[in-house]
Image 1 (spheres, rainbow over the protein chains, first blue to last red):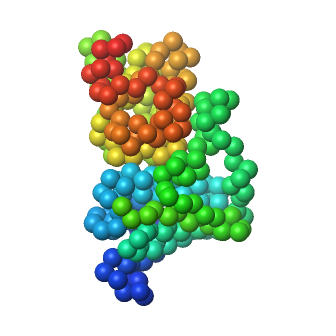
Image 2 (cartoon, one colour; image 1 turned 90 degrees about the horizontal axis):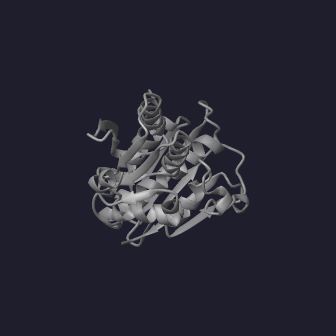
Length: 152
Length: 111
């Protein structure tokens, strides 16, 4: 982990007091997941999401999405980056995480809580993600995920 | 994010997780616990009192360590999960795989 992360912060065009946008490129190295999550979470110290949801839901969901994008999307390729775009508004926060991979079919991921899969080490990421945010959407190509956390 | 290992009087290794247990540091935890297992320890408590969040790969490492420790005739228990982390274990049904107590002291007393 040598490249410094640069978070771009701008007021949203809609101009509301609590509206802003964040943009961050994360190298395809899992060592960046923790620092990238902190950099973004620190922008939510007050406002649209409760401290508890920032501490747990936002941090965990973002860590899952980044790890998936780096490992499965970009396959740890150092020439590829993961792009994160956050839109914070009065009613909700939308987090878009986009990788440069081929995408995948989220419907094909098996349920990790089935008895035969419970003792497996991997395969829980998407399940955890879905349970932590209010809405999850994928781009048609499957290489971009949008997480929505409603205000509160 | 650091891990501290301390050995209690009755030989139980208590591992404190300070910060988060995620994809970027899980190997460090795994190695520390496996080293202690190699050195002869069999009873482990992982203390999450100071843990903010755990991601799915952190959960995965706990599953794999628990299996390895059981294979050696040992046991791994979890303690100090806050309400959100407890919910995460329940949602993923991992609460059925682990013995979970509210404090590390309770986990130690139960060994």
